[in-house]
Length: 107
Image (cartoon, rainbow, N blue to C red):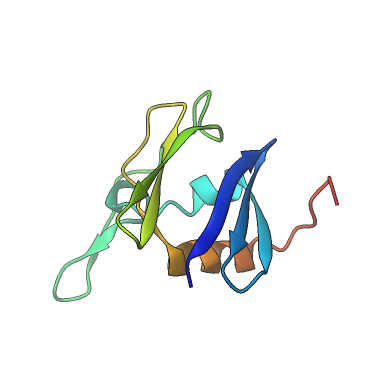
């Protein structure tokens, strides 16, 4: 399912889906679940996971500078610390939103 609207509101990404449902995902959660190979790692054909060493998040790591649409299937956040290699498919974004169950302080 594809979002019909998406925008940063404070420290959250507000997503309105085509079925009328809405999610508010904390930006920190979104960044910590970045699906790129550098953050999440990637598996070879034998299932071995290769992952870069953990590194601390710097200033701007949990702030989005802009959201770039990718085809009709994903969004690419450009974080203010310069990280921009994660492509969040609609399915991945929905899974992260569902996992982020902490109530919003604005609710």
